[in-house]
Length: 328
Image 1: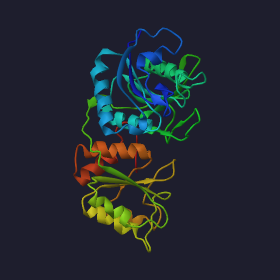
Image 2 (image 1 turned 180 degrees about the vertical axis):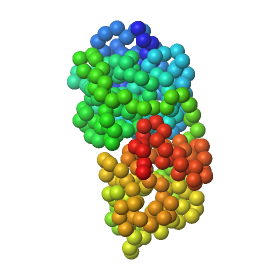
Image 3 (image 1 turned 120 degrees about the horizontal axis):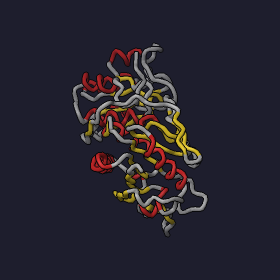
Image 4 (image 1 turned 90 degrees about the horizontal axis):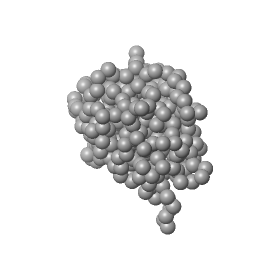
């Protein structure tokens, strides 16, 4: 029997009703006791009981360190987590735990596991199966689907199939107690653990008519890097409100700027249209087909290593853990 460790962090799956609404309180062992079968052999670790809206870089470091502590004594790890920031956590863990030799499977629920109709019990059962069968890496298991952690995005607020694998094949499915593999990712061959991250990263989503001052204010807000969600392939205003000049202003002050798209699928690039071509000349860094969650967490991780603009560019445009399709 493979040795599995379950790490609980809270989230809807662990919630119980309270006077002020749902509150995460159930421990890892209490969650296991809600599902059918004998799971006494699973080691339980209770890190914290938090709504995932409160999960931040400090918690990512705590989770990564807890995984690192157990990796040599187990064959797989399950992390229960709230859904709202699950994609961010899974993406960041993918970089912090690059090349991990055991599967780390993140799961949760749309409805508390104590509810009779909850999806949480099934998700937890499936995650345990995945943790026993998958190769090393960080994954999300949700709604019978398995996704690479740095490619998953929460696309629905209440539906049970809340997550999708974006610009990347699903890793597999779990049904009737069995894992059905669909795709084997190519991941780093050696384990490289690091919790050095720079959390002072901003995300700016452009809207028609946005003032350039909203972009330029990053300079005075102690921000160290910016991800810009532009229109379509990477367009932004160049007349009346010149976003291009605002981006230039950021980069002149040493802030790396990552260009991604508001579109969920396919890549961003400044190469196609005249309106965005100046961005390439400015030296903006394309996120390619990374998810926004992956672009943000990767930038935090990269800035934890270097502030040199060219080294940031090199690392951001290099596929490290499956987050990025090779760029031309």
